[in-house]
Length: 256
Length: 358
Image (cartoon, rainbow over all chains, first blue to last red; front, side):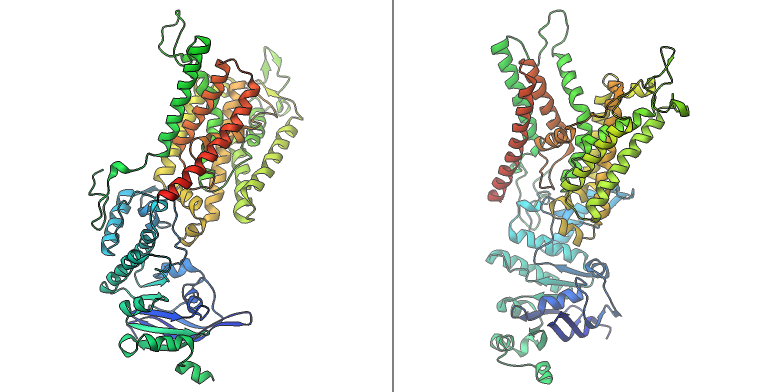
Protein backbone atom coordinates (compact mmCIF):
# COMPACT_ATOMS: atom_id res chain seq x y z
CA UNK A 1 0.00 0.00 0.00
CA UNK A 2 2.83 2.36 0.81
CA UNK A 3 4.06 2.63 -2.78
CA UNK A 4 0.65 3.68 -4.08
CA UNK A 5 0.66 7.38 -4.87
CA UNK A 6 -2.92 7.78 -6.01
CA UNK A 7 -5.93 5.55 -5.60
CA UNK A 8 -9.57 6.12 -6.43
CA UNK A 9 -12.48 3.95 -5.40
CA UNK A 10 -15.85 4.10 -7.13
CA UNK A 11 -15.12 7.62 -8.33
CA UNK A 12 -18.35 8.90 -9.89
CA UNK A 13 -19.41 12.19 -11.43
CA UNK A 14 -22.84 13.07 -12.75
CA UNK A 15 -23.61 16.33 -14.54
CA UNK A 16 -27.35 16.42 -13.97
CA UNK A 17 -28.55 13.35 -15.80
CA UNK A 18 -25.29 12.77 -17.64
CA UNK A 19 -23.16 10.08 -16.05
CA UNK A 20 -19.77 11.38 -17.11
CA UNK A 21 -17.79 9.11 -14.83
CA UNK A 22 -18.94 5.92 -13.15
CA UNK A 23 -17.26 3.90 -10.45
CA UNK A 24 -13.72 4.45 -11.59
CA UNK A 25 -11.18 2.40 -9.65
CA UNK A 26 -7.68 3.55 -10.39
CA UNK A 27 -4.25 3.09 -8.87
CA UNK A 28 -0.91 4.72 -9.54
CA UNK A 29 2.35 3.53 -8.01
CA UNK A 30 5.52 5.44 -7.26
CA UNK A 31 7.58 6.18 -10.36
CA UNK A 32 4.90 4.79 -12.64
CA UNK A 33 3.78 6.51 -15.86
CA UNK A 34 0.19 5.76 -16.82
CA UNK A 35 -1.65 6.84 -19.95
CA UNK A 36 -5.35 7.52 -19.97
CA UNK A 37 -6.93 6.94 -23.39
CA UNK A 38 -10.43 7.05 -24.74
CA UNK A 39 -12.68 8.75 -27.21
CA UNK A 40 -13.90 12.31 -26.77
CA UNK A 41 -16.46 12.35 -23.99
CA UNK A 42 -15.25 9.05 -22.55
CA UNK A 43 -14.61 10.65 -19.16
CA UNK A 44 -10.84 11.20 -19.25
CA UNK A 45 -10.85 14.88 -18.47
CA UNK A 46 -13.74 14.46 -16.03
CA UNK A 47 -11.64 11.91 -14.15
CA UNK A 48 -8.71 14.34 -13.95
CA UNK A 49 -10.95 17.20 -12.86
CA UNK A 50 -12.19 15.18 -9.89
CA UNK A 51 -8.66 14.25 -8.80
CA UNK A 52 -7.34 17.80 -9.06
CA UNK A 53 -10.28 19.35 -7.25
CA UNK A 54 -11.37 21.47 -10.20
CA UNK A 55 -14.81 19.87 -9.75
CA UNK A 56 -16.42 18.09 -6.82
CA UNK A 57 -17.17 14.42 -7.33
CA UNK A 58 -20.68 12.97 -6.95
CA UNK A 59 -19.48 9.88 -5.15
CA UNK A 60 -16.41 7.79 -4.41
CA UNK A 61 -13.18 8.15 -2.50
CA UNK A 62 -9.69 9.40 -3.37
CA UNK A 63 -6.48 8.53 -1.56
CA UNK A 64 -3.38 10.53 -2.32
CA UNK A 65 0.01 9.91 -0.79
CA UNK A 66 -1.40 7.51 1.77
CA UNK A 67 -4.21 9.75 3.01
CA UNK A 68 -7.83 10.07 1.99
CA UNK A 69 -8.24 13.52 0.46
CA UNK A 70 -11.06 15.97 -0.33
CA UNK A 71 -9.66 18.86 -2.34
CA UNK A 72 -11.88 21.93 -2.27
CA UNK A 73 -10.10 23.41 -5.28
CA UNK A 74 -7.14 23.03 -7.62
CA UNK A 75 -4.93 25.11 -5.33
CA UNK A 76 -5.39 22.66 -2.47
CA UNK A 77 -4.53 19.79 -4.78
CA UNK A 78 -1.45 21.64 -5.90
CA UNK A 79 -0.38 22.31 -2.35
CA UNK A 80 -0.74 18.61 -1.64
CA UNK A 81 1.69 17.88 -4.49
CA UNK A 82 -0.44 17.31 -7.60
CA UNK A 83 0.64 19.48 -10.52
CA UNK A 84 -1.39 19.67 -13.72
CA UNK A 85 -0.38 20.87 -17.16
CA UNK A 86 -3.64 22.26 -18.48
CA UNK A 87 -4.68 22.18 -22.10
CA UNK A 88 -4.88 25.96 -22.06
CA UNK A 89 -1.40 26.21 -20.53
CA UNK A 90 -2.08 28.70 -17.72
CA UNK A 91 0.96 30.85 -18.40
CA UNK A 92 1.14 34.64 -18.18
CA UNK A 93 2.18 35.81 -21.67
CA UNK A 94 3.85 39.01 -20.60
CA UNK A 95 6.09 37.51 -17.95
CA UNK A 96 9.45 35.86 -18.49
CA UNK A 97 10.28 32.24 -17.75
CA UNK A 98 11.36 32.50 -14.08
CA UNK A 99 8.34 34.65 -13.27
CA UNK A 100 6.02 32.07 -14.78
CA UNK A 101 7.72 29.19 -13.05
CA UNK A 102 7.36 30.87 -9.69
CA UNK A 103 3.99 32.53 -10.31
CA UNK A 104 2.06 32.58 -7.06
CA UNK A 105 4.95 31.16 -5.05
CA UNK A 106 7.71 33.68 -5.58
CA UNK A 107 10.91 33.48 -3.60
CA UNK A 108 11.34 36.62 -1.54
CA UNK A 109 14.27 38.40 0.06
CA UNK A 110 12.30 40.40 2.63
CA UNK A 111 8.78 39.57 3.61
CA UNK A 112 6.72 42.76 3.51
CA UNK A 113 3.33 41.25 2.79
CA UNK A 114 2.24 42.08 -0.74
CA UNK A 115 5.26 44.36 -1.11
CA UNK A 116 7.75 41.59 -0.38
CA UNK A 117 11.00 42.09 -2.27
CA UNK A 118 11.50 39.33 -4.84
CA UNK A 119 14.65 37.24 -4.86
CA UNK A 120 15.10 37.40 -8.63
CA UNK A 121 18.55 35.85 -8.68
CA UNK A 122 17.47 32.81 -6.68
CA UNK A 123 14.42 32.32 -8.91
CA UNK A 124 16.57 32.59 -11.99
CA UNK A 125 19.08 30.06 -10.67
CA UNK A 126 16.30 27.68 -9.64
CA UNK A 127 14.74 28.09 -13.07
CA UNK A 128 17.99 27.22 -14.82
CA UNK A 129 18.38 24.18 -12.59
CA UNK A 130 14.79 23.10 -13.25
CA UNK A 131 15.17 23.48 -17.01
CA UNK A 132 18.38 21.50 -17.01
CA UNK A 133 16.81 18.81 -14.85
CA UNK A 134 13.89 18.44 -17.24
CA UNK A 135 16.10 18.90 -20.31
CA UNK A 136 14.01 21.82 -21.53
CA UNK A 137 15.64 24.02 -24.13
CA UNK A 138 14.83 27.71 -23.89
CA UNK A 139 17.10 30.19 -25.68
CA UNK A 140 16.47 33.15 -23.42
CA UNK A 141 15.05 33.05 -19.93
CA UNK A 142 14.43 36.79 -19.90
CA UNK A 143 12.19 36.91 -22.92
CA UNK A 144 8.47 36.84 -22.34
CA UNK A 145 6.27 33.83 -23.06
CA UNK A 146 4.61 35.89 -25.79
CA UNK A 147 7.78 35.61 -27.86
CA UNK A 148 7.94 31.83 -27.65
CA UNK A 149 6.77 29.06 -29.90
CA UNK A 150 4.01 26.68 -28.89
CA UNK A 151 6.52 24.00 -28.04
CA UNK A 152 8.62 26.30 -25.91
CA UNK A 153 5.51 27.43 -24.05
CA UNK A 154 4.48 23.86 -23.41
CA UNK A 155 8.00 23.10 -22.18
CA UNK A 156 7.87 25.99 -19.74
CA UNK A 157 4.49 24.81 -18.47
CA UNK A 158 5.82 21.30 -18.02
CA UNK A 159 9.04 22.49 -16.41
CA UNK A 160 6.91 24.41 -13.96
CA UNK A 161 4.92 21.38 -12.94
CA UNK A 162 8.05 19.28 -12.75
CA UNK A 163 9.75 21.86 -10.55
CA UNK A 164 7.09 21.86 -7.91
CA UNK A 165 5.34 18.53 -8.17
CA UNK A 166 6.85 16.52 -5.43
CA UNK A 167 4.40 13.68 -5.87
CA UNK A 168 2.31 13.56 -9.04
CA UNK A 169 2.19 15.23 -12.44
CA UNK A 170 -0.88 15.17 -14.67
CA UNK A 171 -0.68 16.20 -18.32
CA UNK A 172 -3.82 16.72 -20.36
CA UNK A 173 -2.89 16.25 -24.03
CA UNK A 174 0.43 18.09 -23.74
CA UNK A 175 1.35 17.71 -27.41
CA UNK A 176 -2.07 18.22 -29.01
CA UNK A 177 -1.21 21.52 -30.67
CA UNK A 178 2.49 20.93 -31.33
CA UNK A 179 4.58 20.18 -34.39
CA UNK A 180 6.78 17.12 -34.83
CA UNK A 181 9.95 18.56 -33.35
CA UNK A 182 8.16 20.25 -30.51
CA UNK A 183 6.33 17.04 -29.69
CA UNK A 184 9.65 15.24 -29.57
CA UNK A 185 10.96 17.82 -27.14
CA UNK A 186 7.99 17.42 -24.82
CA UNK A 187 8.33 13.64 -25.01
CA UNK A 188 11.98 13.94 -24.03
CA UNK A 189 10.97 15.88 -20.96
CA UNK A 190 8.51 13.13 -20.05
CA UNK A 191 11.30 10.56 -20.41
CA UNK A 192 13.49 12.65 -18.13
CA UNK A 193 10.69 12.67 -15.56
CA UNK A 194 10.51 8.89 -15.83
CA UNK A 195 14.24 8.60 -15.20
CA UNK A 196 13.85 10.83 -12.17
CA UNK A 197 11.15 8.49 -10.88
CA UNK A 198 8.35 11.07 -10.90
CA UNK A 199 4.88 9.51 -11.30
CA UNK A 200 2.80 10.81 -14.20
CA UNK A 201 -0.69 10.54 -15.62
CA UNK A 202 -0.72 11.32 -19.32
CA UNK A 203 -3.92 11.93 -21.24
CA UNK A 204 -3.24 11.43 -24.91
CA UNK A 205 -4.83 10.42 -28.21
CA UNK A 206 -1.48 9.58 -29.72
CA UNK A 207 -1.02 5.79 -29.77
CA UNK A 208 2.67 5.86 -30.71
CA UNK A 209 3.41 8.38 -27.99
CA UNK A 210 1.60 6.33 -25.38
CA UNK A 211 3.44 3.13 -26.29
CA UNK A 212 6.73 5.03 -26.34
CA UNK A 213 6.37 6.66 -22.97
CA UNK A 214 4.22 4.89 -20.41
CA UNK A 215 4.16 1.66 -18.39
CA UNK A 216 0.45 1.12 -18.26
CA UNK A 217 -2.59 2.14 -20.28
CA UNK A 218 -6.03 2.77 -18.86
CA UNK A 219 -8.90 3.04 -21.34
CA UNK A 220 -12.07 4.97 -20.62
CA UNK A 221 -15.29 4.38 -22.51
CA UNK A 222 -18.64 5.99 -21.76
CA UNK A 223 -17.56 7.08 -18.31
CA UNK A 224 -16.16 3.73 -17.24
CA UNK A 225 -12.71 2.23 -17.07
CA UNK A 226 -12.90 -0.63 -19.58
CA UNK A 227 -9.26 -1.67 -19.69
CA UNK A 228 -6.22 -1.47 -17.47
CA UNK A 229 -3.30 -3.06 -19.29
CA UNK A 230 0.45 -3.20 -18.93
CA UNK A 231 2.13 -2.00 -22.09
CA UNK A 232 3.81 -5.33 -22.83
CA UNK A 233 0.50 -7.21 -22.56
CA UNK A 234 -1.23 -5.27 -25.29
CA UNK A 235 -0.84 -3.56 -28.65
CA UNK A 236 -2.33 -0.72 -30.65
CA UNK A 237 -5.14 -2.76 -32.20
CA UNK A 238 -6.15 -4.09 -28.84
CA UNK A 239 -6.35 -0.59 -27.36
CA UNK A 240 -8.34 0.71 -30.33
CA UNK A 241 -10.76 -2.17 -29.86
CA UNK A 242 -11.32 -1.12 -26.25
CA UNK A 243 -11.64 2.57 -27.16
CA UNK A 244 -14.25 1.93 -29.85
CA UNK A 245 -16.11 -0.68 -27.84
CA UNK A 246 -15.38 -3.56 -30.22
CA UNK A 247 -13.86 -5.29 -27.24
CA UNK A 248 -15.37 -4.81 -23.82
CA UNK A 249 -13.63 -4.81 -20.49
CA UNK A 250 -14.43 -6.38 -17.19
CA UNK A 251 -16.14 -3.33 -15.74
CA UNK A 252 -18.62 -3.06 -18.57
CA UNK A 253 -19.34 -6.78 -18.54
CA UNK A 254 -20.21 -6.58 -14.87
CA UNK A 255 -22.52 -3.65 -15.39
CA UNK A 256 -24.37 -5.31 -18.25
CA UNK B 1 24.96 39.74 -19.88
CA UNK B 2 27.04 37.10 -21.51
CA UNK B 3 25.80 34.77 -24.13
CA UNK B 4 26.22 31.63 -22.05
CA UNK B 5 24.10 32.83 -19.17
CA UNK B 6 21.07 32.78 -21.44
CA UNK B 7 21.25 29.60 -23.41
CA UNK B 8 19.68 26.71 -21.53
CA UNK B 9 20.09 23.20 -22.81
CA UNK B 10 22.74 23.95 -25.41
CA UNK B 11 20.85 26.64 -27.28
CA UNK B 12 22.79 29.83 -27.85
CA UNK B 13 21.23 33.19 -27.58
CA UNK B 14 22.49 36.43 -29.01
CA UNK B 15 21.74 39.13 -26.47
CA UNK B 16 22.41 41.80 -29.10
CA UNK B 17 19.33 40.77 -31.02
CA UNK B 18 17.10 41.45 -28.05
CA UNK B 19 14.31 43.89 -29.00
CA UNK B 20 14.59 47.41 -27.60
CA UNK B 21 12.61 48.06 -24.47
CA UNK B 22 9.33 49.77 -25.35
CA UNK B 23 10.36 52.73 -23.19
CA UNK B 24 13.20 53.45 -25.58
CA UNK B 25 10.75 53.95 -28.45
CA UNK B 26 8.69 56.30 -26.32
CA UNK B 27 11.79 58.26 -25.42
CA UNK B 28 12.68 58.44 -29.09
CA UNK B 29 9.22 59.85 -29.80
CA UNK B 30 9.84 62.51 -27.14
CA UNK B 31 13.16 63.49 -28.71
CA UNK B 32 11.63 63.65 -32.19
CA UNK B 33 8.76 65.76 -30.92
CA UNK B 34 11.08 68.24 -29.21
CA UNK B 35 13.20 68.32 -32.36
CA UNK B 36 10.13 69.03 -34.48
CA UNK B 37 9.03 71.95 -32.30
CA UNK B 38 12.60 73.26 -32.31
CA UNK B 39 12.73 73.08 -36.10
CA UNK B 40 9.32 74.66 -36.66
CA UNK B 41 10.19 77.39 -34.14
CA UNK B 42 13.48 78.22 -35.85
CA UNK B 43 12.01 78.25 -39.34
CA UNK B 44 8.70 80.04 -38.77
CA UNK B 45 9.19 82.06 -35.59
CA UNK B 46 12.92 82.59 -35.53
CA UNK B 47 12.85 81.43 -31.91
CA UNK B 48 14.13 78.33 -30.14
CA UNK B 49 11.84 75.91 -28.29
CA UNK B 50 14.49 74.29 -26.18
CA UNK B 51 17.40 76.73 -25.95
CA UNK B 52 17.74 80.07 -24.29
CA UNK B 53 17.61 82.95 -26.79
CA UNK B 54 17.52 85.90 -24.43
CA UNK B 55 20.79 87.77 -24.00
CA UNK B 56 20.06 88.92 -20.49
CA UNK B 57 19.75 85.35 -19.18
CA UNK B 58 22.83 83.22 -18.72
CA UNK B 59 21.66 79.71 -19.50
CA UNK B 60 21.98 77.20 -22.29
CA UNK B 61 18.40 75.93 -22.18
CA UNK B 62 15.16 77.80 -21.85
CA UNK B 63 14.87 76.75 -18.23
CA UNK B 64 11.65 78.61 -17.70
CA UNK B 65 9.89 76.62 -20.40
CA UNK B 66 11.30 73.33 -19.20
CA UNK B 67 10.13 74.06 -15.68
CA UNK B 68 6.65 74.90 -16.90
CA UNK B 69 6.49 71.70 -18.93
CA UNK B 70 7.35 69.45 -16.02
CA UNK B 71 5.30 71.44 -13.49
CA UNK B 72 2.30 71.21 -15.75
CA UNK B 73 2.43 67.44 -15.98
CA UNK B 74 3.59 66.56 -12.48
CA UNK B 75 0.19 66.72 -10.79
CA UNK B 76 -1.62 64.67 -13.41
CA UNK B 77 1.56 62.57 -13.50
CA UNK B 78 1.02 61.54 -9.88
CA UNK B 79 -2.42 60.27 -10.88
CA UNK B 80 -0.95 58.58 -13.94
CA UNK B 81 1.35 56.50 -11.70
CA UNK B 82 -1.72 54.99 -10.03
CA UNK B 83 -3.55 54.63 -13.32
CA UNK B 84 -0.53 52.85 -14.82
CA UNK B 85 -0.62 50.03 -12.30
CA UNK B 86 -4.40 49.77 -12.67
CA UNK B 87 -4.07 49.39 -16.46
CA UNK B 88 -1.17 46.93 -16.15
CA UNK B 89 -3.45 44.89 -13.92
CA UNK B 90 -6.02 44.80 -16.74
CA UNK B 91 -8.35 47.48 -15.36
CA UNK B 92 -9.13 51.13 -15.92
CA UNK B 93 -9.80 53.99 -13.52
CA UNK B 94 -12.08 56.78 -14.67
CA UNK B 95 -12.69 58.14 -11.19
CA UNK B 96 -9.32 59.72 -10.44
CA UNK B 97 -10.20 63.22 -11.68
CA UNK B 98 -13.33 63.31 -9.52
CA UNK B 99 -11.43 61.90 -6.55
CA UNK B 100 -9.06 64.84 -6.98
CA UNK B 101 -12.04 67.23 -6.84
CA UNK B 102 -13.69 65.66 -3.80
CA UNK B 103 -10.44 65.18 -1.89
CA UNK B 104 -9.26 68.72 -2.58
CA UNK B 105 -12.53 70.12 -1.17
CA UNK B 106 -12.60 67.93 1.91
CA UNK B 107 -8.88 68.15 2.72
CA UNK B 108 -8.74 71.91 2.18
CA UNK B 109 -11.57 72.46 4.63
CA UNK B 110 -9.33 70.97 7.33
CA UNK B 111 -6.36 73.14 6.29
CA UNK B 112 -7.85 76.61 6.65
CA UNK B 113 -6.60 79.51 8.73
CA UNK B 114 -8.83 81.26 11.28
CA UNK B 115 -7.98 84.83 10.36
CA UNK B 116 -7.11 86.56 7.11
CA UNK B 117 -5.47 90.02 7.47
CA UNK B 118 -6.80 90.27 11.01
CA UNK B 119 -10.40 89.46 10.03
CA UNK B 120 -12.12 86.07 10.54
CA UNK B 121 -11.63 83.85 7.50
CA UNK B 122 -14.87 84.21 5.56
CA UNK B 123 -14.34 80.91 3.76
CA UNK B 124 -13.47 78.76 6.80
CA UNK B 125 -15.94 75.88 6.86
CA UNK B 126 -15.32 74.62 10.39
CA UNK B 127 -14.62 77.94 12.13
CA UNK B 128 -17.59 77.39 14.43
CA UNK B 129 -16.04 74.17 15.68
CA UNK B 130 -12.62 75.81 16.08
CA UNK B 131 -11.14 73.45 13.46
CA UNK B 132 -8.81 76.02 12.01
CA UNK B 133 -5.03 76.34 11.90
CA UNK B 134 -4.79 72.57 12.36
CA UNK B 135 -1.37 70.93 11.94
CA UNK B 136 -0.70 69.94 8.33
CA UNK B 137 -0.87 66.25 9.16
CA UNK B 138 -4.66 66.51 9.69
CA UNK B 139 -5.60 67.56 6.13
CA UNK B 140 -3.00 65.11 4.83
CA UNK B 141 -4.53 62.18 6.69
CA UNK B 142 -8.04 63.31 5.73
CA UNK B 143 -6.95 63.40 2.08
CA UNK B 144 -5.36 59.96 2.16
CA UNK B 145 -8.47 58.68 3.94
CA UNK B 146 -10.64 60.04 1.11
CA UNK B 147 -8.51 58.37 -1.55
CA UNK B 148 -8.43 55.15 0.43
CA UNK B 149 -12.21 54.98 0.83
CA UNK B 150 -12.85 55.82 -2.83
CA UNK B 151 -10.30 53.24 -3.94
CA UNK B 152 -11.69 50.66 -1.55
CA UNK B 153 -15.19 51.10 -2.99
CA UNK B 154 -13.82 50.92 -6.56
CA UNK B 155 -11.78 47.84 -5.81
CA UNK B 156 -14.45 46.02 -3.84
CA UNK B 157 -17.04 46.65 -6.56
CA UNK B 158 -14.70 45.32 -9.24
CA UNK B 159 -13.32 42.39 -7.27
CA UNK B 160 -16.48 41.11 -5.59
CA UNK B 161 -19.40 42.10 -7.81
CA UNK B 162 -17.30 41.48 -10.92
CA UNK B 163 -18.74 44.43 -12.77
CA UNK B 164 -16.38 45.84 -15.41
CA UNK B 165 -13.86 48.37 -14.01
CA UNK B 166 -15.13 50.86 -16.58
CA UNK B 167 -18.59 50.87 -15.01
CA UNK B 168 -17.49 50.77 -11.37
CA UNK B 169 -15.11 53.69 -11.73
CA UNK B 170 -17.56 55.59 -13.93
CA UNK B 171 -19.99 55.40 -11.02
CA UNK B 172 -17.31 56.67 -8.66
CA UNK B 173 -16.45 59.42 -11.14
CA UNK B 174 -20.00 60.81 -11.04
CA UNK B 175 -20.50 60.25 -7.31
CA UNK B 176 -17.20 61.79 -6.21
CA UNK B 177 -17.84 64.84 -8.37
CA UNK B 178 -21.23 65.13 -6.68
CA UNK B 179 -19.55 64.99 -3.28
CA UNK B 180 -17.10 67.69 -4.34
CA UNK B 181 -19.97 70.02 -5.24
CA UNK B 182 -22.08 69.15 -2.20
CA UNK B 183 -19.29 69.58 0.35
CA UNK B 184 -19.39 73.41 0.35
CA UNK B 185 -22.52 73.83 -1.76
CA UNK B 186 -20.38 74.77 -4.73
CA UNK B 187 -18.36 77.44 -2.92
CA UNK B 188 -14.59 77.42 -3.34
CA UNK B 189 -12.60 76.71 -0.17
CA UNK B 190 -9.60 78.98 0.30
CA UNK B 191 -6.96 80.40 2.66
CA UNK B 192 -4.92 77.38 3.69
CA UNK B 193 -2.29 77.40 6.43
CA UNK B 194 1.28 78.16 5.42
CA UNK B 195 2.41 74.61 6.09
CA UNK B 196 -0.31 73.23 3.81
CA UNK B 197 0.53 75.79 1.13
CA UNK B 198 4.18 74.71 1.28
CA UNK B 199 3.33 71.26 -0.16
CA UNK B 200 2.69 72.60 -3.65
CA UNK B 201 5.08 75.53 -3.62
CA UNK B 202 7.69 76.03 -6.33
CA UNK B 203 9.08 72.79 -7.68
CA UNK B 204 7.62 70.67 -4.86
CA UNK B 205 5.02 69.05 -7.18
CA UNK B 206 7.86 67.90 -9.44
CA UNK B 207 9.84 66.48 -6.52
CA UNK B 208 6.77 64.63 -5.23
CA UNK B 209 5.97 63.30 -8.71
CA UNK B 210 9.50 62.04 -9.36
CA UNK B 211 9.84 60.47 -5.90
CA UNK B 212 6.54 58.63 -6.24
CA UNK B 213 7.45 57.56 -9.77
CA UNK B 214 10.74 56.05 -8.58
CA UNK B 215 9.04 54.36 -5.62
CA UNK B 216 6.36 52.76 -7.78
CA UNK B 217 8.75 51.74 -10.52
CA UNK B 218 10.74 49.87 -7.85
CA UNK B 219 7.56 48.33 -6.46
CA UNK B 220 6.43 47.16 -9.89
CA UNK B 221 9.84 45.71 -10.77
CA UNK B 222 11.00 44.19 -7.53
CA UNK B 223 8.04 43.19 -5.39
CA UNK B 224 5.51 40.41 -5.38
CA UNK B 225 2.79 43.05 -5.76
CA UNK B 226 4.30 44.24 -9.03
CA UNK B 227 4.79 40.75 -10.39
CA UNK B 228 1.17 39.90 -9.64
CA UNK B 229 -0.03 43.09 -11.36
CA UNK B 230 1.61 41.97 -14.60
CA UNK B 231 0.45 38.37 -14.13
CA UNK B 232 -3.21 39.30 -13.59
CA UNK B 233 -3.18 41.76 -16.48
CA UNK B 234 -1.63 39.28 -18.82
CA UNK B 235 -3.65 36.16 -17.97
CA UNK B 236 -6.12 36.37 -15.14
CA UNK B 237 -7.06 32.69 -15.31
CA UNK B 238 -3.43 31.63 -15.14
CA UNK B 239 -2.89 33.92 -12.18
CA UNK B 240 -5.91 32.41 -10.42
CA UNK B 241 -4.74 28.86 -11.12
CA UNK B 242 -1.34 29.82 -9.73
CA UNK B 243 -2.92 30.63 -6.40
CA UNK B 244 -2.76 34.43 -6.57
CA UNK B 245 -5.57 35.99 -4.55
CA UNK B 246 -6.98 38.05 -7.39
CA UNK B 247 -9.74 39.85 -5.48
CA UNK B 248 -7.44 41.07 -2.69
CA UNK B 249 -4.87 42.18 -5.20
CA UNK B 250 -7.39 44.16 -7.24
CA UNK B 251 -8.71 45.94 -4.17
CA UNK B 252 -5.16 46.94 -3.26
CA UNK B 253 -4.48 48.18 -6.79
CA UNK B 254 -7.50 50.50 -6.78
CA UNK B 255 -6.81 51.66 -3.22
CA UNK B 256 -3.30 52.70 -4.25
CA UNK B 257 -4.72 54.48 -7.32
CA UNK B 258 -7.20 56.31 -5.08
CA UNK B 259 -4.51 57.36 -2.60
CA UNK B 260 -2.28 58.64 -5.41
CA UNK B 261 -5.23 60.68 -6.76
CA UNK B 262 -5.74 62.14 -3.29
CA UNK B 263 -2.05 63.05 -3.04
CA UNK B 264 -2.43 64.82 -6.38
CA UNK B 265 -5.44 66.65 -4.91
CA UNK B 266 -3.39 67.89 -1.96
CA UNK B 267 -0.57 69.09 -4.20
CA UNK B 268 -2.98 70.78 -6.62
CA UNK B 269 -5.07 72.58 -4.00
CA UNK B 270 -1.94 73.58 -2.12
CA UNK B 271 -0.34 74.96 -5.27
CA UNK B 272 -3.51 76.90 -6.18
CA UNK B 273 -4.15 77.94 -2.54
CA UNK B 274 -7.78 77.06 -3.09
CA UNK B 275 -10.05 74.10 -3.71
CA UNK B 276 -12.91 74.15 -6.16
CA UNK B 277 -15.53 71.56 -6.97
CA UNK B 278 -14.48 71.56 -10.61
CA UNK B 279 -10.88 70.65 -9.86
CA UNK B 280 -9.43 67.71 -11.72
CA UNK B 281 -12.10 67.50 -14.42
CA UNK B 282 -10.75 65.33 -17.27
CA UNK B 283 -7.59 64.54 -15.30
CA UNK B 284 -8.51 60.85 -15.45
CA UNK B 285 -8.36 60.93 -19.24
CA UNK B 286 -5.12 62.90 -19.27
CA UNK B 287 -3.61 60.36 -16.87
CA UNK B 288 -4.77 57.43 -19.00
CA UNK B 289 -3.39 59.20 -22.07
CA UNK B 290 0.01 59.65 -20.42
CA UNK B 291 0.13 55.96 -19.59
CA UNK B 292 -0.97 54.89 -23.06
CA UNK B 293 1.45 57.24 -24.79
CA UNK B 294 4.12 55.83 -22.48
CA UNK B 295 3.57 52.35 -23.84
CA UNK B 296 1.23 50.91 -21.20
CA UNK B 297 -1.00 48.43 -23.01
CA UNK B 298 -4.73 48.92 -22.46
CA UNK B 299 -5.17 45.16 -22.71
CA UNK B 300 -3.05 44.80 -19.60
CA UNK B 301 0.18 43.07 -18.69
CA UNK B 302 2.57 45.52 -20.28
CA UNK B 303 4.00 48.91 -19.39
CA UNK B 304 6.09 50.68 -16.80
CA UNK B 305 6.16 53.80 -14.68
CA UNK B 306 9.25 54.99 -16.59
CA UNK B 307 7.18 54.78 -19.76
CA UNK B 308 4.37 56.75 -18.18
CA UNK B 309 6.78 59.44 -16.96
CA UNK B 310 8.14 59.82 -20.50
CA UNK B 311 4.56 59.77 -21.75
CA UNK B 312 3.70 62.59 -19.38
CA UNK B 313 6.67 64.59 -20.71
CA UNK B 314 5.44 64.07 -24.27
CA UNK B 315 2.11 65.36 -23.08
CA UNK B 316 3.73 68.42 -21.51
CA UNK B 317 5.88 69.12 -24.55
CA UNK B 318 2.85 69.06 -26.83
CA UNK B 319 0.91 71.53 -24.71
CA UNK B 320 3.92 73.76 -24.23
CA UNK B 321 4.86 73.47 -27.89
CA UNK B 322 1.44 74.62 -28.98
CA UNK B 323 1.67 77.62 -26.70
CA UNK B 324 5.15 78.29 -28.10
CA UNK B 325 3.77 78.19 -31.64
CA UNK B 326 0.98 80.52 -30.47
CA UNK B 327 -1.75 78.12 -31.50
CA UNK B 328 -5.16 78.26 -29.89
CA UNK B 329 -5.85 76.11 -26.83
CA UNK B 330 -8.70 74.52 -28.81
CA UNK B 331 -6.21 72.82 -31.06
CA UNK B 332 -4.44 71.34 -28.07
CA UNK B 333 -7.53 69.38 -27.09
CA UNK B 334 -8.10 68.17 -30.64
CA UNK B 335 -4.51 67.05 -31.00
CA UNK B 336 -4.58 65.39 -27.57
CA UNK B 337 -7.45 63.20 -28.75
CA UNK B 338 -5.60 62.28 -31.93
CA UNK B 339 -2.47 61.39 -29.97
CA UNK B 340 -4.33 59.14 -27.54
CA UNK B 341 -6.00 57.19 -30.33
CA UNK B 342 -2.72 57.14 -32.27
CA UNK B 343 -0.86 55.68 -29.30
CA UNK B 344 -3.41 52.86 -28.94
CA UNK B 345 -3.30 52.14 -32.67
CA UNK B 346 0.49 52.02 -32.46
CA UNK B 347 0.27 49.61 -29.52
CA UNK B 348 -2.07 47.30 -31.44
CA UNK B 349 0.16 47.43 -34.48
CA UNK B 350 3.21 46.64 -32.35
CA UNK B 351 1.44 43.65 -30.82
CA UNK B 352 0.43 42.28 -34.20
CA UNK B 353 3.90 42.69 -35.62
CA UNK B 354 5.33 40.94 -32.60
CA UNK B 355 2.87 38.08 -32.98
CA UNK B 356 3.91 37.60 -36.60
CA UNK B 357 7.59 37.82 -35.71
CA UNK B 358 7.30 35.17 -32.98
